[in-house]
Image (cartoon, rainbow, N blue to C red; front, side, top):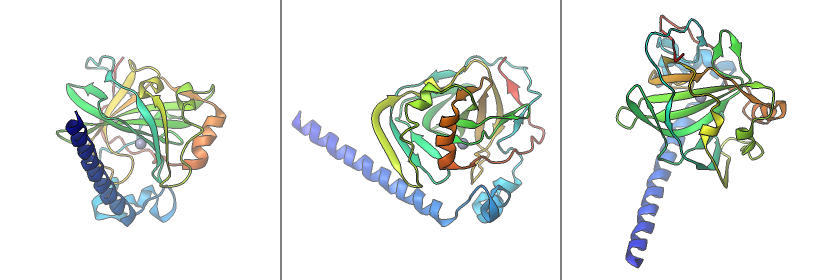
Length: 257
Ligand SMILES: [Zn+2]
């Protein structure tokens, strides 16, 4: 048993070392070119800031969009989610607040299995539904291991009653870029999704550089609520980190219902 334990420890150290190496690489890349939500590095200039970001200005399937005139021409059942709990592990990325997710939770959509990576927030909402913007939007990000394609679930919030899911961590949000807050308290992002039977889906993109057009967006129709105090907890830290609406360019939006 002792030898096995030793092996496990070394295996873990190896995994951690690889993880740090990846993070270090990612951080270096992110620091090379910055982007913001206003001014000379704002959304209208993202495509010019880095040659690798041209999709932001030239690609025709960008997100977010205004959701309207959705079609129901193929059967779409309730979202096939298999979600587990994860310990609170929040990071302020400098562009928003993000929760890392323990491996093992999945979404199966249109026959493709995606693994949950992280969730994060935007204030105000990025998507609008029939022109109506929300106070905040949760993005739950899933990735397919084979293709790297993403599926992102969007949950829009309106200011009204307090949100119990957000209340689990809204007092420990990391305030400054690079800050990380953790807690042994476990949360399940499924508790933050109000109704996974009714949703809209369309082919879209990352809403931050490099704006990769590799995202199947799934936006829930039912809006969640958050208190005004909760809205300010997020917005005071993140500011307005929502990308302006992008043209539909002939894409079809499907609805599940
Ligand atoms: Zn997002």
